[in-house]
Length: 246
Image 1 (cartoon, rainbow, N blue to C red):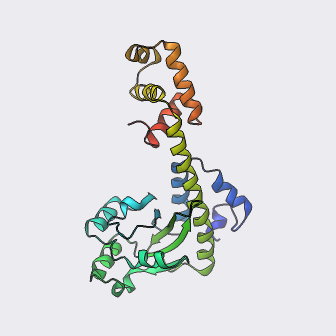
Image 2 (cartoon, rainbow, N blue to C red; image 1 turned 90 degrees about the vertical axis):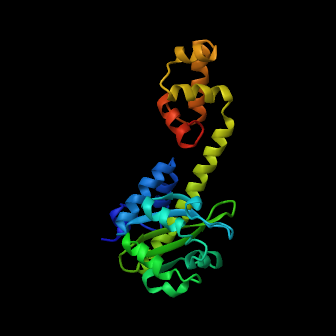
Image 3 (spheres, rainbow, N blue to C red; image 1 turned 180 degrees about the vertical axis):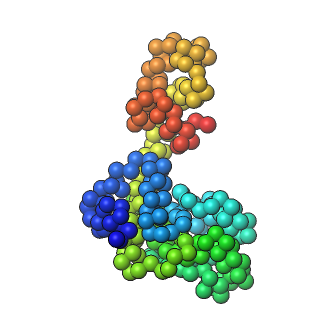
């Protein structure tokens, strides 16, 4: 059975695009991408922005990823982004491609080909498909699916390319909405969310902020509505996720 059929969808198709459009949070997308990665017999995925020429770290350009933390740390520690043939190719082309690190050690200009090959073989991620994408503003990025399986078939490349374009765009929409929400909350609403996250009741928050309990509830209800959540618990969780509170 084809991977996409295992997911219960057909590609391409309006119904499948509709499922991606229904993903509401970065965590929704992360879970979806984990499921997709497993369906295509890969080990990890990454959604990332195309690194600027001056960029030195992959981690700072990663949007969401299931790469092992140790691999990502070692990759940046060794400075492997700077002369990456994959990034060079992504900068020069918008076509998807499959890359096998083990057979491409001579592609690097810094002599670190064997180091890269050894590192990715250690994590069984020496082969990967890369799918360039861009958002509505024109910002470029890519989605990758890595593992130690054989090369994707042309049909799999087509399916994953279709999915990647939609995932990258949806992720950009979610991040944009999060920024707008962050800008719309007042300082008092953020204060009330912070104290709620700390486990304080409305009455306790009222004492701390020298407000009435009614006013505190009003701020929390407004914050909950602005964050497009259904209760205070969800509002606090979303505020933490988007970095509105710590």
